[in-house]
Length: 352
Image 1: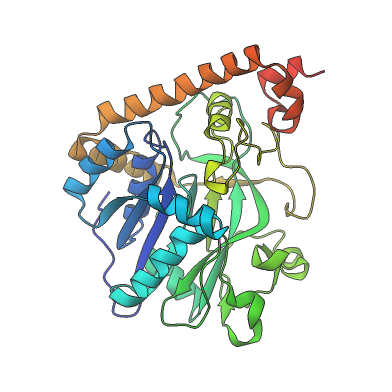
Image 2: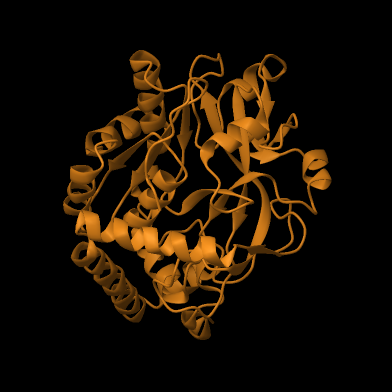
Protein backbone atom coordinates (compact mmCIF):
# COMPACT_ATOMS: atom_id res chain seq x y z
CA UNK A 1 0.00 0.00 0.00
CA UNK A 2 1.35 3.42 -0.94
CA UNK A 3 2.33 5.51 2.07
CA UNK A 4 2.77 8.84 0.31
CA UNK A 5 1.39 11.73 2.33
CA UNK A 6 -1.72 13.60 1.32
CA UNK A 7 -1.08 16.93 -0.36
CA UNK A 8 -3.97 19.36 -0.29
CA UNK A 9 -4.14 23.12 -0.52
CA UNK A 10 -7.24 23.03 1.64
CA UNK A 11 -6.41 20.79 4.59
CA UNK A 12 -3.44 19.06 6.13
CA UNK A 13 -3.20 17.16 9.38
CA UNK A 14 -0.66 16.15 11.99
CA UNK A 15 -1.28 13.34 14.46
CA UNK A 16 0.12 13.57 17.99
CA UNK A 17 0.38 10.64 20.41
CA UNK A 18 1.90 9.72 23.74
CA UNK A 19 3.44 6.26 24.12
CA UNK A 20 4.79 4.33 27.07
CA UNK A 21 6.36 0.91 26.42
CA UNK A 22 4.31 0.23 23.27
CA UNK A 23 6.97 -1.02 20.86
CA UNK A 24 4.77 -4.03 20.11
CA UNK A 25 2.05 -1.75 18.72
CA UNK A 26 3.73 1.38 17.39
CA UNK A 27 4.53 -0.04 13.90
CA UNK A 28 0.93 -1.01 13.11
CA UNK A 29 -0.40 2.26 14.52
CA UNK A 30 2.06 4.39 12.54
CA UNK A 31 1.61 2.35 9.36
CA UNK A 32 -2.16 2.66 9.56
CA UNK A 33 -2.18 6.43 9.86
CA UNK A 34 0.45 6.91 7.16
CA UNK A 35 -1.61 4.64 4.92
CA UNK A 36 -4.69 6.88 5.18
CA UNK A 37 -2.68 9.98 4.28
CA UNK A 38 -1.74 11.65 7.57
CA UNK A 39 0.98 14.17 6.71
CA UNK A 40 3.00 14.15 9.93
CA UNK A 41 3.13 12.06 13.10
CA UNK A 42 4.74 13.06 16.39
CA UNK A 43 5.13 10.46 19.15
CA UNK A 44 6.03 11.64 22.65
CA UNK A 45 7.74 8.81 24.54
CA UNK A 46 7.73 8.71 28.32
CA UNK A 47 8.87 6.30 31.03
CA UNK A 48 10.28 3.94 28.41
CA UNK A 49 11.64 0.59 29.60
CA UNK A 50 11.15 -1.36 26.36
CA UNK A 51 12.80 -0.92 22.93
CA UNK A 52 10.57 1.94 21.73
CA UNK A 53 13.46 4.33 21.05
CA UNK A 54 15.31 1.85 18.86
CA UNK A 55 12.12 1.05 16.95
CA UNK A 56 11.22 4.71 16.40
CA UNK A 57 14.72 5.47 15.11
CA UNK A 58 14.32 2.76 12.46
CA UNK A 59 10.94 4.16 11.37
CA UNK A 60 12.20 7.74 11.32
CA UNK A 61 15.16 6.72 9.15
CA UNK A 62 12.70 5.75 6.38
CA UNK A 63 9.85 8.16 7.17
CA UNK A 64 11.15 11.59 8.11
CA UNK A 65 7.58 12.81 8.67
CA UNK A 66 7.37 10.47 11.69
CA UNK A 67 9.19 12.05 14.62
CA UNK A 68 9.62 11.07 18.25
CA UNK A 69 10.55 12.95 21.40
CA UNK A 70 11.56 12.18 24.96
CA UNK A 71 8.72 13.65 27.04
CA UNK A 72 9.92 12.63 30.50
CA UNK A 73 10.56 16.24 31.50
CA UNK A 74 6.92 17.09 30.77
CA UNK A 75 5.78 14.58 33.41
CA UNK A 76 7.37 16.76 36.07
CA UNK A 77 5.67 19.84 34.63
CA UNK A 78 2.30 18.10 34.74
CA UNK A 79 2.77 17.07 38.37
CA UNK A 80 3.87 20.55 39.45
CA UNK A 81 1.04 22.23 37.57
CA UNK A 82 -1.50 19.61 38.73
CA UNK A 83 -2.60 19.04 35.14
CA UNK A 84 -2.85 15.72 33.35
CA UNK A 85 0.28 14.68 31.47
CA UNK A 86 -1.75 14.29 28.30
CA UNK A 87 -3.03 17.85 28.54
CA UNK A 88 0.48 19.20 29.07
CA UNK A 89 1.79 17.38 25.98
CA UNK A 90 -1.23 18.28 23.88
CA UNK A 91 -1.04 21.96 24.82
CA UNK A 92 2.67 22.00 24.02
CA UNK A 93 2.04 20.39 20.61
CA UNK A 94 -0.89 22.72 19.87
CA UNK A 95 1.07 25.89 20.63
CA UNK A 96 4.07 24.59 18.68
CA UNK A 97 2.02 23.86 15.57
CA UNK A 98 0.20 27.20 15.74
CA UNK A 99 3.64 28.83 15.64
CA UNK A 100 5.03 26.59 12.86
CA UNK A 101 1.99 27.01 10.59
CA UNK A 102 2.97 23.86 8.71
CA UNK A 103 -0.35 22.02 8.97
CA UNK A 104 -3.94 23.18 9.21
CA UNK A 105 -5.32 20.62 11.69
CA UNK A 106 -4.09 18.67 14.70
CA UNK A 107 -5.42 15.32 15.93
CA UNK A 108 -4.63 13.55 19.20
CA UNK A 109 -4.89 9.77 19.62
CA UNK A 110 -3.55 7.08 21.92
CA UNK A 111 -1.62 4.14 20.48
CA UNK A 112 -4.69 1.92 20.93
CA UNK A 113 -6.87 4.35 18.93
CA UNK A 114 -7.11 4.25 15.14
CA UNK A 115 -8.78 6.79 12.86
CA UNK A 116 -10.84 4.68 10.45
CA UNK A 117 -13.28 5.18 7.60
CA UNK A 118 -16.56 3.29 7.40
CA UNK A 119 -15.30 2.39 3.93
CA UNK A 120 -11.96 0.93 4.98
CA UNK A 121 -9.03 2.11 2.90
CA UNK A 122 -10.34 5.64 2.24
CA UNK A 123 -7.89 8.52 2.51
CA UNK A 124 -8.09 11.31 5.06
CA UNK A 125 -9.14 13.88 2.46
CA UNK A 126 -12.53 12.13 2.25
CA UNK A 127 -13.02 12.89 5.94
CA UNK A 128 -12.60 16.60 5.29
CA UNK A 129 -14.91 16.34 2.28
CA UNK A 130 -17.69 14.60 4.22
CA UNK A 131 -17.39 16.79 7.33
CA UNK A 132 -17.26 20.11 5.50
CA UNK A 133 -15.88 23.22 7.18
CA UNK A 134 -15.32 22.91 10.92
CA UNK A 135 -13.39 24.27 13.88
CA UNK A 136 -13.69 20.96 15.71
CA UNK A 137 -14.35 17.56 14.16
CA UNK A 138 -15.42 15.00 16.76
CA UNK A 139 -15.18 11.33 15.86
CA UNK A 140 -17.09 8.76 17.87
CA UNK A 141 -15.32 5.89 19.63
CA UNK A 142 -16.02 2.32 18.55
CA UNK A 143 -14.38 -0.31 20.76
CA UNK A 144 -13.37 -3.85 19.97
CA UNK A 145 -14.97 -6.66 22.00
CA UNK A 146 -13.44 -9.41 24.14
CA UNK A 147 -12.76 -12.52 22.08
CA UNK A 148 -10.69 -15.68 22.01
CA UNK A 149 -8.18 -14.41 19.46
CA UNK A 150 -4.51 -15.20 19.96
CA UNK A 151 -2.15 -12.48 21.22
CA UNK A 152 -0.84 -10.15 18.50
CA UNK A 153 -3.41 -11.32 15.96
CA UNK A 154 -3.88 -9.28 12.77
CA UNK A 155 -5.14 -5.90 13.81
CA UNK A 156 -7.74 -5.61 11.03
CA UNK A 157 -9.59 -8.54 9.51
CA UNK A 158 -12.40 -8.87 6.98
CA UNK A 159 -15.15 -8.89 9.61
CA UNK A 160 -15.21 -7.99 13.28
CA UNK A 161 -17.68 -6.84 15.89
CA UNK A 162 -17.47 -3.30 17.25
CA UNK A 163 -19.35 -1.47 19.98
CA UNK A 164 -20.37 2.13 19.39
CA UNK A 165 -19.74 4.51 22.28
CA UNK A 166 -20.84 8.04 23.12
CA UNK A 167 -17.24 9.04 23.87
CA UNK A 168 -15.51 11.17 21.24
CA UNK A 169 -11.99 12.26 20.22
CA UNK A 170 -11.64 15.58 18.43
CA UNK A 171 -9.54 17.15 15.69
CA UNK A 172 -8.95 20.90 15.87
CA UNK A 173 -8.38 23.55 13.20
CA UNK A 174 -5.28 25.44 14.25
CA UNK A 175 -6.50 28.83 12.99
CA UNK A 176 -9.75 28.58 14.94
CA UNK A 177 -10.39 29.94 18.41
CA UNK A 178 -11.24 26.65 20.11
CA UNK A 179 -9.03 27.11 23.16
CA UNK A 180 -6.39 24.67 24.33
CA UNK A 181 -6.81 20.92 23.78
CA UNK A 182 -8.06 18.62 26.50
CA UNK A 183 -7.76 14.82 26.37
CA UNK A 184 -10.92 14.28 24.31
CA UNK A 185 -11.87 17.73 23.07
CA UNK A 186 -11.04 21.44 23.30
CA UNK A 187 -11.69 23.86 26.15
CA UNK A 188 -13.77 26.15 23.97
CA UNK A 189 -16.69 23.69 23.90
CA UNK A 190 -17.18 24.46 27.60
CA UNK A 191 -16.54 28.21 27.51
CA UNK A 192 -18.22 29.35 24.26
CA UNK A 193 -19.92 26.44 22.48
CA UNK A 194 -22.19 28.71 20.42
CA UNK A 195 -19.18 30.36 18.77
CA UNK A 196 -17.48 27.13 17.68
CA UNK A 197 -18.37 25.22 14.53
CA UNK A 198 -18.27 21.65 15.87
CA UNK A 199 -19.18 18.81 13.51
CA UNK A 200 -19.22 15.05 13.19
CA UNK A 201 -17.62 13.40 10.17
CA UNK A 202 -21.05 13.16 8.48
CA UNK A 203 -21.22 16.97 8.52
CA UNK A 204 -23.90 17.15 11.21
CA UNK A 205 -23.53 19.71 14.02
CA UNK A 206 -22.71 18.13 17.36
CA UNK A 207 -23.66 18.92 20.93
CA UNK A 208 -21.70 17.56 23.86
CA UNK A 209 -22.21 16.26 27.37
CA UNK A 210 -19.74 15.16 30.03
CA UNK A 211 -17.71 18.41 29.80
CA UNK A 212 -17.20 17.84 26.09
CA UNK A 213 -16.11 14.21 26.35
CA UNK A 214 -19.32 12.61 25.07
CA UNK A 215 -22.10 13.09 22.55
CA UNK A 216 -25.27 14.64 23.89
CA UNK A 217 -28.04 12.13 24.52
CA UNK A 218 -30.03 13.48 21.56
CA UNK A 219 -27.07 13.04 19.19
CA UNK A 220 -26.40 9.56 20.59
CA UNK A 221 -30.03 8.54 20.07
CA UNK A 222 -30.05 9.82 16.49
CA UNK A 223 -26.91 7.88 15.57
CA UNK A 224 -27.77 4.57 17.22
CA UNK A 225 -28.16 2.52 14.03
CA UNK A 226 -25.52 4.11 11.80
CA UNK A 227 -21.76 4.14 11.35
CA UNK A 228 -20.31 7.56 10.64
CA UNK A 229 -18.07 8.12 7.56
CA UNK A 230 -15.09 8.24 9.97
CA UNK A 231 -14.67 7.08 13.55
CA UNK A 232 -12.02 6.21 16.14
CA UNK A 233 -11.51 2.48 16.68
CA UNK A 234 -10.42 1.99 20.30
CA UNK A 235 -8.68 -1.34 20.85
CA UNK A 236 -9.45 -1.66 24.54
CA UNK A 237 -9.25 -5.45 24.68
CA UNK A 238 -7.00 -6.89 21.93
CA UNK A 239 -6.52 -10.44 23.30
CA UNK A 240 -6.95 -11.75 26.84
CA UNK A 241 -3.23 -11.89 27.59
CA UNK A 242 -2.55 -8.46 26.07
CA UNK A 243 -5.38 -6.93 28.08
CA UNK A 244 -3.96 -8.42 31.28
CA UNK A 245 -0.41 -7.32 30.44
CA UNK A 246 -1.65 -3.77 29.84
CA UNK A 247 -2.84 -3.60 33.45
CA UNK A 248 0.82 -3.50 34.51
CA UNK A 249 1.35 -0.15 32.80
CA UNK A 250 -0.21 1.76 35.70
CA UNK A 251 -1.13 5.43 35.46
CA UNK A 252 1.86 7.28 36.89
CA UNK A 253 1.43 9.93 34.19
CA UNK A 254 -1.80 10.82 36.02
CA UNK A 255 0.04 11.02 39.38
CA UNK A 256 -1.52 7.66 40.25
CA UNK A 257 0.84 5.25 42.02
CA UNK A 258 -1.55 2.28 41.89
CA UNK A 259 0.32 -0.89 40.84
CA UNK A 260 -2.54 -1.79 38.49
CA UNK A 261 -4.03 0.27 35.67
CA UNK A 262 -7.35 0.96 37.35
CA UNK A 263 -9.37 2.63 34.57
CA UNK A 264 -10.47 -0.62 32.90
CA UNK A 265 -13.68 -2.59 33.47
CA UNK A 266 -12.56 -6.14 32.88
CA UNK A 267 -12.31 -8.43 29.88
CA UNK A 268 -16.05 -8.33 29.31
CA UNK A 269 -18.26 -6.43 26.89
CA UNK A 270 -19.18 -2.90 27.89
CA UNK A 271 -22.29 -2.85 30.03
CA UNK A 272 -25.32 -0.82 28.99
CA UNK A 273 -24.77 2.68 30.35
CA UNK A 274 -24.56 6.27 29.13
CA UNK A 275 -21.28 5.51 27.34
CA UNK A 276 -22.71 2.70 25.18
CA UNK A 277 -24.82 3.33 22.07
CA UNK A 278 -26.94 0.44 20.89
CA UNK A 279 -25.83 -3.16 20.42
CA UNK A 280 -22.54 -4.37 18.90
CA UNK A 281 -22.36 -4.01 15.12
CA UNK A 282 -20.45 -5.85 12.43
CA UNK A 283 -17.71 -3.91 10.66
CA UNK A 284 -16.63 -5.44 7.37
CA UNK A 285 -13.67 -4.79 5.09
CA UNK A 286 -13.49 -5.68 1.41
CA UNK A 287 -11.32 -8.86 1.25
CA UNK A 288 -8.98 -7.51 -1.44
CA UNK A 289 -8.52 -4.21 0.38
CA UNK A 290 -7.81 -6.17 3.56
CA UNK A 291 -5.19 -8.34 1.83
CA UNK A 292 -3.53 -5.31 0.22
CA UNK A 293 -3.49 -3.55 3.59
CA UNK A 294 -1.71 -6.46 5.27
CA UNK A 295 0.75 -6.71 2.37
CA UNK A 296 1.45 -3.02 2.78
CA UNK A 297 2.11 -3.48 6.48
CA UNK A 298 4.50 -6.36 5.75
CA UNK A 299 6.37 -4.12 3.29
CA UNK A 300 6.50 -1.37 5.93
CA UNK A 301 8.07 -3.82 8.40
CA UNK A 302 10.58 -4.97 5.80
CA UNK A 303 11.50 -1.48 4.56
CA UNK A 304 12.12 -0.24 8.10
CA UNK A 305 13.77 -3.50 9.26
CA UNK A 306 11.34 -3.80 12.17
CA UNK A 307 10.75 -7.54 12.51
CA UNK A 308 13.30 -8.03 15.28
CA UNK A 309 12.17 -4.97 17.21
CA UNK A 310 8.51 -5.97 16.96
CA UNK A 311 9.34 -9.39 18.42
CA UNK A 312 11.27 -7.72 21.25
CA UNK A 313 8.24 -5.54 21.91
CA UNK A 314 5.96 -8.57 21.99
CA UNK A 315 8.30 -10.40 24.36
CA UNK A 316 8.13 -7.35 26.61
CA UNK A 317 4.33 -7.69 26.68
CA UNK A 318 4.56 -11.42 27.37
CA UNK A 319 6.89 -10.71 30.29
CA UNK A 320 4.45 -8.13 31.66
CA UNK A 321 1.81 -10.84 31.77
CA UNK A 322 4.19 -13.05 33.76
CA UNK A 323 4.95 -10.13 36.09
CA UNK A 324 1.24 -9.69 36.67
CA UNK A 325 0.89 -13.36 37.58
CA UNK A 326 3.73 -13.04 40.10
CA UNK A 327 2.40 -9.77 41.52
CA UNK A 328 -1.01 -11.31 42.18
CA UNK A 329 0.51 -14.48 43.62
CA UNK A 330 2.61 -12.44 46.05
CA UNK A 331 -0.17 -9.92 46.76
CA UNK A 332 -3.52 -11.73 46.42
CA UNK A 333 -5.31 -8.85 48.14
CA UNK A 334 -4.86 -6.84 44.91
CA UNK A 335 -7.43 -9.06 43.21
CA UNK A 336 -10.17 -7.77 45.47
CA UNK A 337 -8.78 -4.26 45.65
CA UNK A 338 -8.92 -3.97 41.84
CA UNK A 339 -11.63 -6.58 41.26
CA UNK A 340 -13.32 -4.54 38.55
CA UNK A 341 -10.39 -4.69 36.12
CA UNK A 342 -9.99 -8.46 36.51
CA UNK A 343 -13.57 -9.39 35.61
CA UNK A 344 -13.67 -11.88 32.74
CA UNK A 345 -9.98 -12.79 33.03
CA UNK A 346 -8.45 -16.03 34.29
CA UNK A 347 -7.65 -14.18 37.51
CA UNK A 348 -11.33 -13.59 38.30
CA UNK A 349 -11.56 -17.22 39.47
CA UNK A 350 -9.59 -16.20 42.55
CA UNK A 351 -11.80 -13.27 43.54
CA UNK A 352 -13.46 -13.73 46.94
